[in-house]
Image (tube, rainbow, N blue to C red; front, side, top):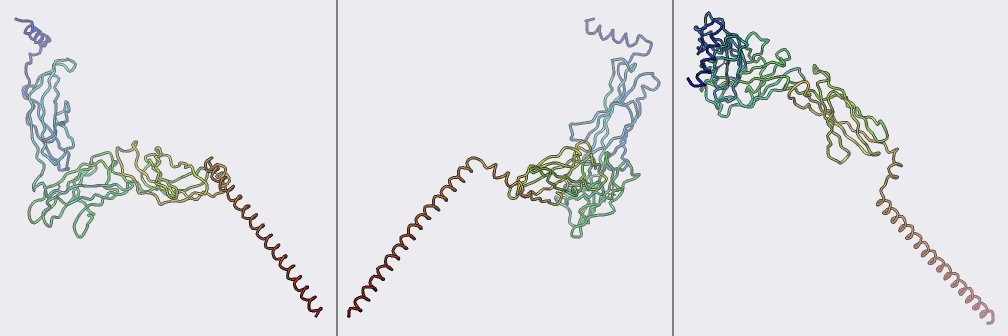
Length: 397
Ligand SMILES: *[C@@H]1O[C@H](CO)[C@@H](O)[C@H](O)[C@H]1NC(C)=O
């Protein structure tokens, strides 16, 4: 007997040493069933203990492994129960596996595993893949109602009428949409009222349909509605001048079921001809400030979204209506004092040249005028003399 075999033998001796029978293998569970209660996602799995363990006092557990047929990311669960329920993606076949795990005592280390037993569940999947609706887009408006819209299948059969069914854990049974959204006479979406909505729980949707030309492939979706919220635009955006160079911006969250601490904001502002600048406002705060220049016009808008403390994701609200504000130029003096050196130099040169030009032209004009006057006086004098001479001559005759 070599050392390795001896170790195994020794371990088996220990296993046996407190009186129970020696176990070297264990059977898989029996009668694995996968039941669809018709809730568009949840499956109920149950099984029975292997007969060979019937009246033995052992520590028995079961390991479940389940996923969609092409998925490599299977979920594993260990339970002492003979049943388990979870939500599934019904768009593909589902494979459920279970096996027995046995220990002599729950605290001991050595555990035996059985082989797997396996069951495949095939959700209703009639019709060809191209008949299935695409791009379901659901938005929960302000936690008040939800609208879901979809696109027809890539190769939708002519004259397909779609129908939407939904289920969540507060409903006894699957419900059909009772307020369809239509476009050009065809159903393209569903409107859900606030009573239909549930947060932090799977919201399962199945959109199937019928066509005279053949079956329509159902499409399944599982949503978390708290991650699909679009808040209403913030209200009452107010701008005030808090100091000569600071505009204070304040707003109110729009009245809704959304808690104020669940909102975050984005503020955008721009001067008269500049681009939008964006400021992200930390959670729950409803004011901010903006540096302003006297005489300028500023326009501001604000939008809201659910923050990361209340959901994993959200949509931005629409922008609030634009608020504009003119900073009065009482601070105009301030502004000129703050001209930079280059501007000062240019202004100085400009002023000096204006002064020079003005004074030179004044002098020039004055000189011209003086000369003109002098000329006039001279000619007047000459004229007088001529008249005088003529007079004298006349007298002499
Ligand atoms: C569509 O799905 C619902 C819910 O699963 C089902 O009750 C209904 O019979 C299906 N309709 C068609 C036409 O397959």
